[in-house]
Image (cartoon, rainbow, N blue to C red):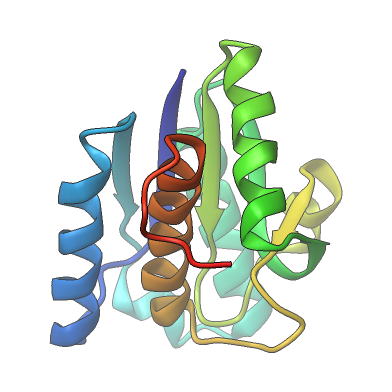
Length: 155
């Protein structure tokens, strides 16, 4: 199983980049992880929220591997504790099918994508799309350390 992480646009916040890179480096010992950044043009951002979400959805759809199970990171999705998420990852990996997680842009996802794919929530709270990258990759790392019985997660 390989995990794909699709991110809308690059982050320009240095501490998020550093944290993300740290967990990306750590995860390489546990799983195959491919991170793709879907770049949108700055002029799209000036064309209105719905148009921006629509264009991001179009670019996202073109990037998704059709053989992969796809999950959107959305505040209205299914919630897990860290232990539950680890078991969910374990169950997903048992199928052998690749998994793709998508972090949307600043306005979330177009309705088309929300209706097409299941959603996972990190919290009922709303986080910036840039913070979600760091929080989610840390939770992936935490899940793999839980599955390996390592002393990272304390319960």
